Length: 146
Image (tube, rainbow, N blue to C red; front, top):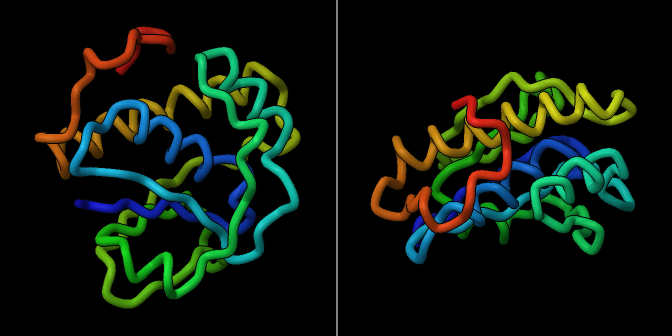
């Protein structure tokens, strides 16, 4: 099984959205987890609301610390453009997405970030795990832009 680890500093926004979209579109053989180097207490409320709009419930998701154990089970580390604060995990293939933090942003900006993350996840699945990607498995819930 290919495991993709989505990581940022607080694991309360971008990495949570990315892992949720990945798991929505991936079938058996690929899975996503998310973590952060300094996890927040909760997923940002603006992120919970934006994801709820597309049928993904993150209100019960809890940010978790990036540990060696989590990293050991992954093949890919996808960081969310957090610069020098991004986690460094030796031995993993690293992919960095320069995506702004949704924390404290207006709802329309959070939706833009959400949609951008969804497109990036679909592109990642197509490139790195095409046998696992089944776009028809879920109805398109975000605007048709890819």
